[in-house]
Length: 219
Picture 1 (cartoon, helix red, strand yellow):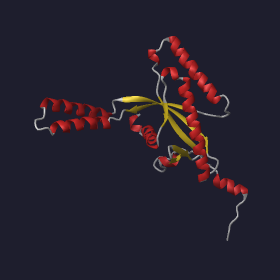
Picture 2 (cartoon, rainbow, N blue to C red):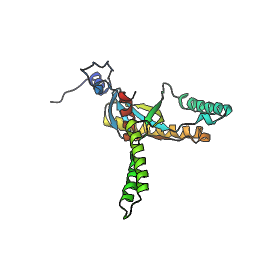
Picture 3 (tube, rainbow, N blue to C red):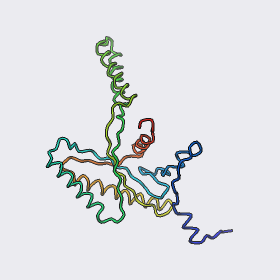
Picture 4 (cartoon, rainbow, N blue to C red):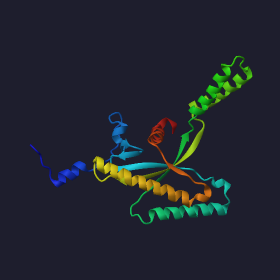
């Protein structure tokens, strides 16, 4: 027998009604408190019904600029913000500056391969082997202690998901894709003098940001 629902019941069923609550120590999990519901393509889906994209931007070394050039950079950036947000009521952009460890695994692997290539020669150069081994040891130590870090500049954009349905999710993803592309074009155009570049983070890169932020042992 088909069960009919009122319009109010349907709206409640498809709505996002998550409300964050304090984490009960020893009783609740971090996932229960988290605003993130899942990942869709290169976006995060929040429990409040938003699709979120992370954009990484290159920094501008203001220390190398004169006072006049610094003022010009700030003026151009302010003009960009006014152009992006001035005509959109309620639009919010979030800006994060995150200190991230430099991942040296691929670099270490390169030196390990060089070491093996030298070692496999009929008459390996012992001095060269010793030098290569010192490189491997040095960068492995840096990687294990996270002593080498870099600053990542992240812009967070989002768009509302109309309903808790797959078609609504696809539509929100299309809208956010256009918003991200427009943001990147305008940002790079506004700061072209300073060789500013921006790109959307992939799903894997976005997860790495979250994992770093949730790794309380490093803070």
